[in-house]
Image (cartoon, rainbow, N blue to C red; front, side, top):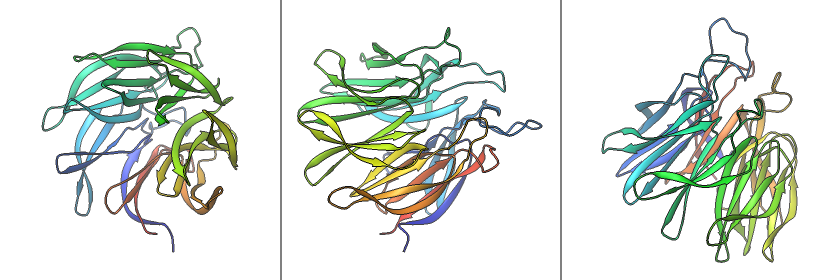
Length: 352
C-alpha cells in the first residue's frame, strides 16, 4: 500500500512553494507562481510571463477554493508567520516581465487585517528566492535569500532583517551569489542558521549573541534546502543538492560530520514527518533542456540510516509540506514534461 493517496489537484502555473497556515479556525494554503506560459513562445524553464499572482486558498470539506490573489510577480516563496499576535505573509519575487526580465524588484510583506492580506512593507530585492522567519529569545528575524549570478554588476548578497517593533530593518548581510534557502534550528542551547547557495558554498552559521558567524561548510555548490530531525537520540541535517547527490550529516561534538550520501541529483526541498524524510526533486540536466519528470523519494529511518521506502512522481517539483490532522502532504510542481509552466499542485493523504 502506498504511503501517499492522491486527494486533490490544484491548477497552478510554475508553482514554487506550498505553504499551509491557519488563522483562527480557517485553514489556508499559499502558493507562489513563477510564470505563465506565453502564447507563441517556445517552451523553456527560463521563459514565460512572470506577471503572476500568489494564490491564497481556503480549505473546504472537499478541497480548496480560491480565497485571495496577491500580486507577486515571479513568485518564488511565501512565508507566513506571527509576531505579537499579528499575522504576516512575506512573498519573494525573483523577477518580473515577459523577457527580458527585471530581477531588481520589490518583494512585498503583507499583513492580515482580519479578512485578507494587505501590503505592509516593500523590500527592494534582487532575484529573491526565499523568506524565513525565526526567533531568538524575544528577537524576531526575517532572512532573505536572493541573487542570481547572471549580471554580476547588479547582483546582491542575502540579508537578514530584524523586526524593530514597527517594521523590518536590515540586520546582517550574508555573502552569497545565487542564494536559495535558509534553515534555523537549535542544537544544545545554541542557535544555528543554514544558508544554501547554488554557485558558492552553502554554510552553517552560529549565533554568538550579537550576530551570525560562520561555523562550517555544508556543500561546495548546488545547495538548495535543509531539514533537521532527531533519530535515536541524535540530531541529523539533510542537505539537498541540485546537481549532485544530497547529503545527510550527523551532529558530533558541536559540528556536523557526513553520515550518508543520498544518491541522485535534482534535490530541491525536504519535509520531515516522524521517522520519514520526503525529498522533492526538481530537474536534472541543463537548464536549457531539463528533465522535469522525476521520481521523488520518501525515506525511512531504519535505526542506522535512511532507506528509500517509496518513490512518487513529480514534474519540476519545488516544495513539500506535511500538515493537518489527517495528515496531508502537499507537493508543488512547476514544469510539465515538455517544459511548460501549467501543471498541478497535488494534495495527498498520508496513509501508512
